[in-house]
Length: 113
Length: 116
Image 1: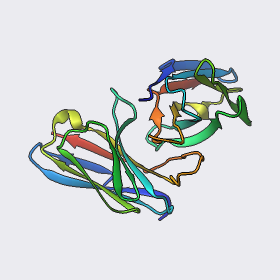
Image 2: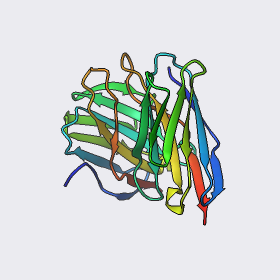
Image 3: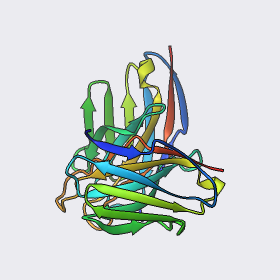
Image 4: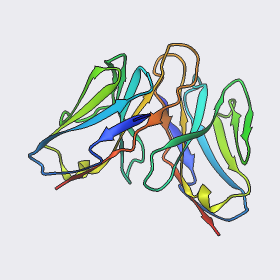
């Protein structure tokens, strides 16, 4: 089955700096890679996703890149703000067979004002 | 009520109790999921249901018994739990329509379970 590894487990940055979270996956058939953000005491919510037919996707201050050959994908947050502080989860799934998301172990991002 | 709802939000139970968690989705989705969230394993998939049929059971102990009477409701029946079962139990739903489409999952607020 799919195995998703996520690094780092914790990340502390100064407000305004960039943050990068990296994930690797094992199933070459995986083709959908979402990122979820979970603020303290809240439910996880989708913030951005990417499919395997594109290499990069941007939405304002967040971007996701995908390297299918190396089987890794990353979340980039630029100009970080205190409200970006949360736990971020990457995930992977495929369109055939087992389609449930496999989540990474999460990254706790702390943005210092 | 919109989205995915869960009741109760907090539950304290003894090891010999029987209780049930309820999840309801108002999004017209056909797939529902139970996750366990703890410090040890932040998002651990427990069960998956598609069109009311269980399609995945990730080696979950039998003291957890899921039930999906229809595509909008999902229950998790709890019986003789252990203190290590204390965690946040999250329900989620998605539209899984067999097409190559993304499977965005919408999560409920969770039930914080404490087993004494």
